[in-house]
Structures are given as structure tokens and as C-alpha cells.
Length: 102
Image (cartoon, rainbow, N blue to C red; front, top):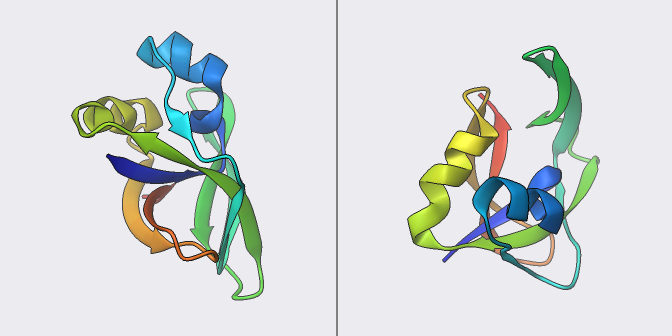
């Protein structure tokens, strides 16, 4: 199981069901990361949120989405070429991964 810190559509069960044909387990409590900002980037004519390194005092709220190992390649594909997945530790101590601007 791979823990992904999601600050966007990946934690939405409607998106999960429509894109992946199933829902993922999402931790009940929200989590937070610091030192990052969110900007809007235009991709294929639509603006999407993308995380970039930011001010140390900035905080982003998100949810921990638990992705089965065998589906991580599909999630990478869904996130697209403009994103890369990196390891991060949340403010509550969760070791997870997050998609940031490539």
C-alpha cells in the first residue's frame, strides 16, 4: 500500500470510481504539510492545482489516500506528465508521497 498526500481530486470518491473503477481507502482525519505552495497550471486548456516549493510558513491541507501497490502506475498516469511523485512527511508524522510540479 502506498500512502499519497492528496491536495486535489485524488481523494474524491466520485473521481476515484470514474477513473479507476473503484474507491480507495482515505484516512478519516485531514493532514497537513508545510513549506509548499499551490499554483494553477494550464494543462490541455484546463487549469489544475500543482504543488511547488514555497515559503516555510505556508501550510497545505490534504488527505492521505491509500493506493494499492498494483494501481500506482495508473495513478501516476492519471496525475500526468506535469507531476512527479516524491516522498514527504506530513505535519502529523505520516511518511507518504505527494505529486508536485515536475
